[in-house]
Length: 256
Image (tube, rainbow, N blue to C red; front, side, top):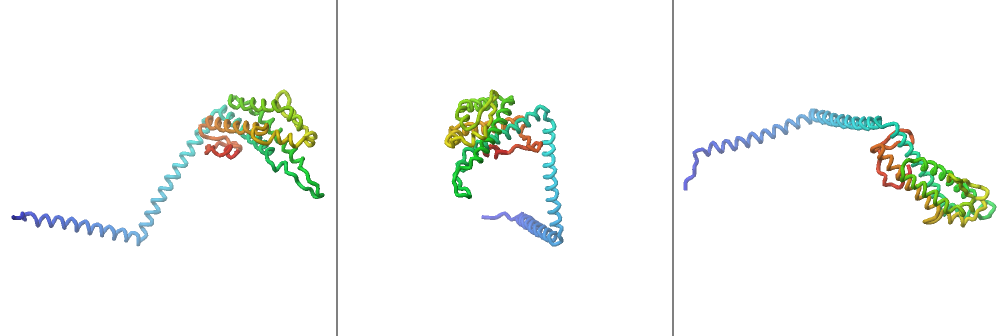
């Protein structure tokens, strides 16, 4: 068996020549990189690179912010008024929800011992809580009554019906209402009212206070949703500015 050797020497020379060039080329590149690191040039290049990246990111953020501002500027006067109305409605609903929750707490009806050793429930705190509820309720009824949203108007009607259905018990604790649905508190009568009647009205699931609190919560969510749709993803804040709406899954959007 014979082997062909005519071009073997040329082939071997080519292979080793290629390997040699690759090896020394790589070594030369490594030495060059090492030299750059030693001289500080490499560090300067890296700083220049990251400075350019940071500048690009900053310009992108600025562009995005400009687009959002342009979007706000394009909103019509009517849309801005609607957003402000929804914000006010959210604030009113929050106040009513808070007032209803305060009357549900057991701590409000806790027997306390005075300095003279006598024990009694602090009636002034209860009366104050009732007063806050009445004020928040009236504001809520006024705001929801003005709303053009049928879903909000339904909450208004439900609240009025619940109040009418409990009118006798409310009267016993000093709360009356007029033809417009506004409540009035007789503080003197409230001070002397039966605690069991007050608690039956405002404590426990399905009570009057619980029902009104639910209506307030539902109204808040409806107003929040309407704000989002009207603004296309922005919110009118209490400071009179517009900001991007975040996650609203938290309870009452953390109640503002």
